[in-house]
Length: 230
Image (cartoon, rainbow, N blue to C red; front, side, top):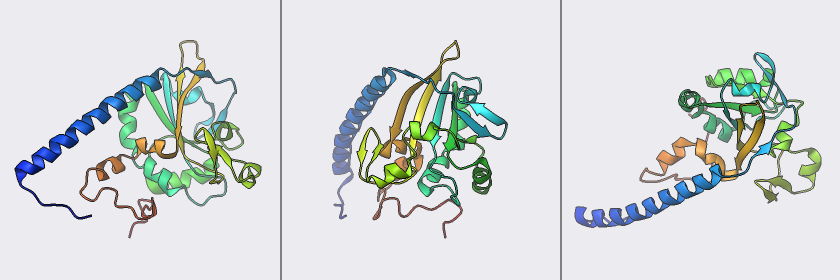
């Protein structure tokens, strides 16, 4: 992309025009945030059980004494050698956020269908400290529309991101939010899928500020596990 080279005064004129658009976007984002917080809740009726390093734990247990829970639906299926590169990219931002979230009444965990025996070596390889549990044997991933059965895949369409997708696959990314009330009841408050998961990809936000932007020619094809860059 060719860029004109102008005087400082002309640059300031263009920058101020962009600033007006950026402020409009910020106000729109604030409006959408208010709408998100106003969404109704759904009571979680099922007794989901997860395999953790501390033994079997319920969804309620994953809150770790806090009232809010964020879940990264990490694409790592049973039998996989390693986790999805894009979900790993998301997870690379996890530990830095987690300390601050924990001190603001929010617990954040990753959940995958891979067994704990498959998850742990990869987590250690990547050097991550966050809690990562297995939903293997549980309907959790299927209920929250991030894992799909062979029958669903063979149909040529999956129910993902609140609609029918022609792309298929057994695992897809997402983020879900839950809250626990004073009586201990757990409610599902929000989920986001598709490009909505970019909220965890702080690196993209910084690339959007860089002169060449994301500079992608094949989507996320440039991305590698952080220990696999040449």
